[in-house]
Length: 435
Image 1 (tube, rainbow, N blue to C red):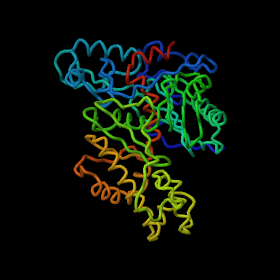
Image 2 (spheres, one colour):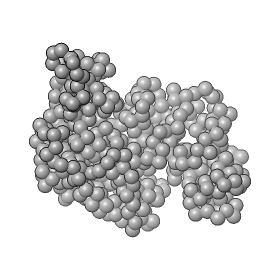
Image 3 (cartoon, one colour):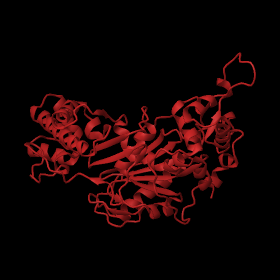
């Protein structure tokens, strides 16, 4: 088995940092505890918490949201943004500082101000973190996220080809435990898992057609194996939640349809700051019919997922006698001028655009977000997607954008699940980690 380290967006795990630095003084006992006290309790009773995947209006959550989105912010700015009273904001800020989630920056206070200095606030970069796991059809990732939502460390693991639940979870749990050892000295608030298929609120994968899983107690098994509370969410819904929490536009009002494509295709709908999670599971679109397909879907099943996923596109390229092993090989051929490769990319873009347009017309969202490597790995596909959207949709003027997550979309989905409890109830998440 090969385990690959992925680049992180910030510097180093906390084990390389001094535990007595000025930025760590004055924290609550949870943040000052030793690595032994903070070690995950492997073999402890499993703790599984259902995902919320929404923008919380709890005062502490609202205050934390403004701070993590604003970088350095002042208390009066938080009052203005949240519409909470100054007294409420002060109480929540004090509690968040005591919990080790937020810190004051006396060194960034404005100089020459008469009276008590106004100290800017920021997410404590040495504060708690959360473990993310994305279980993919071919590749899985284990990530660590700070409270600001940044990926601060990641490894990549080939998903065992057997897809057998016991083998897959054993490999992931072993890698996760080793990865956690890097974060000696940091409080790990919990773990979040993002996975395709249908997941119930007990963290049970009720049905995952691509992996062949049915009624797998994923949350319970991973929680017991890594010793952390676990939240399990369908990965496309988690991707939509990541857009709510992390996108610069913070689109919490109105409705947003998230359309994903890579090794699967799927959609999720967010309404007024909450991702809609149907009781029957995520919206299924892989079976939707395609039309006028010439190069894709060589088996002629007529199904969307058999035409546009990475594996399906590679199969189509091989059927055209192209020497490719991966989707990246096909993109390279297209970039170097191979006409057949370019035609396959164009047809994939058209079929994806038509499907996105039809689904969007059914839901009629205020905005449409296109996410996943099918859209972001090869930008040459986007003009074909755009043309198909405009030609097919009854609302060609609908706001459409490509997710800014790029190749990190699976990592962000795992992070959205991992940080779900923190963003819903930050003080409760810290208390839960202490329990």
